[in-house]
Length: 92
Image 1 (cartoon, rainbow, N blue to C red):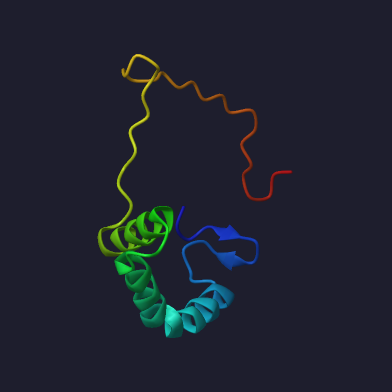
Image 2: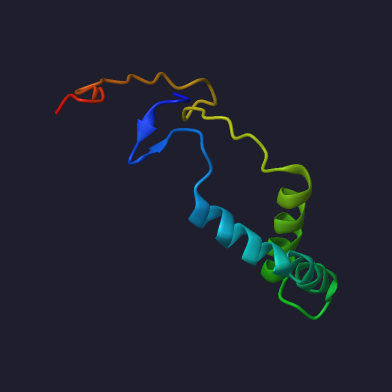
């Protein structure tokens, strides 16, 4: 719920610590992608490492694929959700 206060800040506003960490990590992204590319293309690397590197590159390039949730017969799964408590600001 945008605009609602959660833990001292308004929901939907960026977290400063998260932004700082993202900025620091962004400096290494180019090199990390090169490392993944090197592993993926290294014929001497274990197959599992090559597949993992390729999957990581695909995930970053195209996003992770959606995963269908199916039952043992391949059909849809029924999900029941029970709400035990709803917390409203000011309510304990």
